[in-house]
Length: 450
Image 1 (cartoon, rainbow, N blue to C red):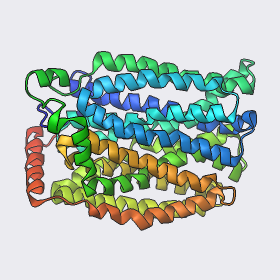
Image 2 (image 1 turned 135 degrees about the horizontal axis):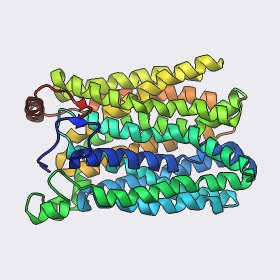
Image 3 (image 1 turned 45 degrees about the vertical axis):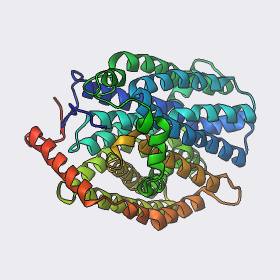
Image 4 (image 1 turned 30 degrees about the horizontal axis):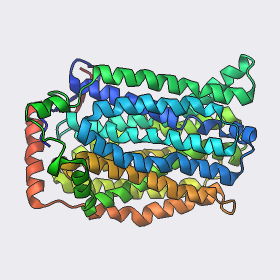
């Protein structure tokens, strides 16, 4: 699809344009969804005692929380192509808030498992975020826009590690029991999600020049049938080997991040004998790196594209993955808390830069099936998380051993990034589009405060 009026700069303090409203609403919506998605993770030590969960059962709930997202991400990308990101995001936020607020009603492992399964659907919010920012920003800044919106969204994985134990502690200070405290704490992200859904529907639009329904009525966007139908765009994306290469790549970075978000607090709690609040604070540092780390991945992707074109974007992605694998192996070998924290931050930097680099490539794979491509690649992250969760589900493997094996896997499969190639015609076309966008920007830079 050829969307006109895309922004060639990111004006961070502005809400005046539809591009910047979409940018800010999309990252905040993803942040809140991430908060609700992993809100229970830093409280798992309490939930484990309350529901008498074994390590295997905890592993099963981790798998459930990310497995359902695979299916929903595949569907949500196609839905974006069909009805637009505004309606899709609004519906997901409103419906997704229900299981987040309802998880406190469970009293058994089976009920808890089903609740985490239902909550996992909101993880598909990432695909809509990437789709919406791709609709709004030009080639010279699309990598930075995608990476920043996703990174600030992923930041929810860090804030939830810090805030949920504090909310829980605050409830205990009011005289609430631990059994009731973790249940009431989960109401907070659910309420904010519902309010955000209403705001998304009221204040955003699908593209710079209108909503998809308006663009189709004016003949500026193909109707969602025939070659542009949901089924056909999905099949087009699914037949492209580059899409599946990126599927694996995203499993190696975002899949790893999801895994760490699920186990970090309980890993530090058990391995270093810390309090729940301290373990949550340290685990939160991993997610807080999203303030800038994923953005850096997108910025470097755009910078590599300046001289190396699309090949440059792919080259940078490979470098980031290799560095991530090395850092993860090193983190798994740390036995001193201070060293573990330091190496974890280095690891976090590269895993999130790899994610930003991945979605610096995605917008250029197939513009006519953008939603399907984004959905399939995004689902790869959850497939990676499910596969990794089996390492931490087994009673025979410690969390430390699981992290080591995970790091080796990243190193072994990083070369999948090099399977992503583009024709000379596409390279030339995108190089021209990049230069046009840079020319219109007059060299002012990708990011600005106004």
